[in-house]
Length: 637
Image 1: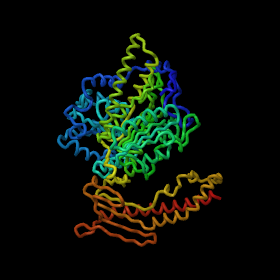
Image 2 (image 1 turned 180 degrees about the vertical axis):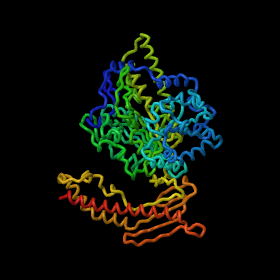
Image 3 (image 1 turned 45 degrees about the vertical axis):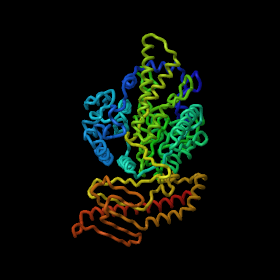
Image 4 (image 1 turned 90 degrees about the horizontal axis):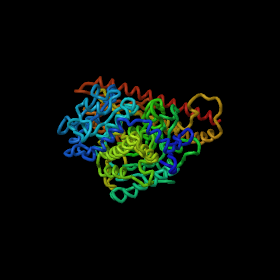
């Protein structure tokens, strides 16, 4: 995005300094960078897509309905060295997709696993040829499904491979740090598609105005979409938060809070950090809100929305979000822009995906269904032509119209592939003209180069076949907070719960003075805060002790763990077989299991181990509460 016609000023703010991540550049310098890098395979393939699209569609064949998995097909691609446990955690989703995609033809559901999966360094064409699938043109679902889900991080399956594959297929990505997040996401999709999650037809639009770049995004993109979608889809309510209304508190209401819509689109600066910075992995790609602005010193967490701001109480189930921000989707190891021939500029120790969309999709109370975000920098040329400063939001409009119409999110992403192909074709034509000795105005070539690079880096997180689970406003219940506990792989399936809250439920995470043994007194400001907290600590401790006074452990069995759901305190799809209640004074009630009139000793032994673990956890929690109270009293002196 340009601040003026003589230089290019780029999006993204350095969280450590508050300055822009990339200094302004002249068109001549950008042309130098563009000419120093030969067109890569992705650019050439995107250009070929554009040329072919003049004659054919890049959706599935004309006789295939993209809205039907039984016709379009669905597949999952694991890295060759993927963990068995990850595949196991996704089994509820995989079985669900196999039933839908393989309903009429089992071959339209595919799992690419082990040697059939992605091999290190493999390009799209090589992968497709290895599986006897066409490498260009309309998708043939009997040879390769149209919807493809990649499972793994950017080191296992590079983002470039996803971008290449997405020029032909509808492609999504899942990558989490824990098995529980994979399981939670899988069950969130099932709950949505079984009608257990229903949300009102509400579109949320959030646009920050804290400098010229974000003012343009708030006015041209967010404001333009509010006017366009509001007029063209009157059955959807459109809620706009822009400028002074685009605060972090407002975003917290829209992203996991009580005002969370069915579809959310945000436009803001993304926060970045220097290579190896302690906050790079956790906060790179966080959304800078109206509370902060570039050029005012280092950013603070109060100014941006990061993964850690999505607490365990957030309600995200059923949401599909589009986060327009630098690094909102992830960070490649090497900077794709700042290098000439033979020079590579590292910007991170390893490539990584942003923490915010991962937290959104893997949330323990029901994750978002999908999130679209940008890998590396996101530039304003996505929606404003530099030469005319004219809004060009048709791609975003088309994406939203298809999504709000109930189409799968992966199919709605086709419009971004179309634009990437068109821009790549125009850029390659001008680069070839320069190489032949011709002349292209530097400003024009620089603009085309930034537009082409920007268009290629949008990435879809989540299953590309998901849809927004909407109902009419009057019929939608309050968005549920699902209890999505991962079942054990043992048989029978068991579940145990303690009423004891985690330490953060007491507010302890706000005081770093609990992190070690300190002899020096806390600063007066901290002590003042602690005194207020200590005043209510007695009641909190009483409440916690009351909650822990009765411990209950229940063990259930089920023949199909895929059918088990926990919500509102009830376990659905399983049968209670053993129960234990232990009061703080030692009073105990035990219901033991029988099988064919005899004591079921195997199940009882498993139940007893669960009771033992729960008792140990309660004892540790009691100790934590007592230690915390003692520490607080010491630091308030």
